[in-house]
Image 1 (cartoon, rainbow, N blue to C red):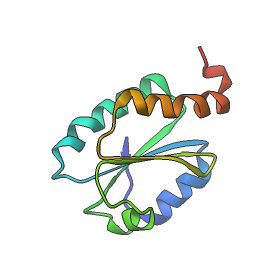
Image 2 (cartoon, helix red, strand yellow):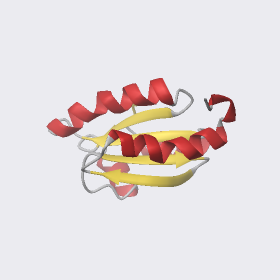
Image 3 (cartoon, one colour):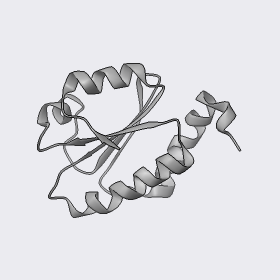
Image 4 (cartoon, rainbow, N blue to C red):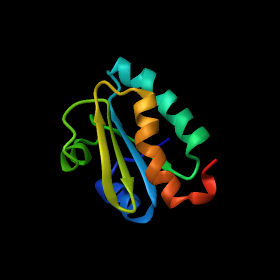
Length: 113
């Protein structure tokens, strides 16, 4: 999960990537630090064609504000440039996997089991 620091970078990725997960967090958030590696592992293992990026809300408050992120952790899912789902605070991995699965397999049918 690569870190992104500018709004133009985020906007370009939203336009260019077919499937994108944006993980918003901050250094002081212990829940975020625990959840982030689990999300990264799930994405790379289950949804390998989905790109995932990390935005530190303390270092990049403009990005958080532009995307209306006011609590952390927050995960935004984009498919073909459109926001598909927004999950905040209490995020269950099984719920995240379910939310991603259908649109992901519609975009990448060769990835379906």
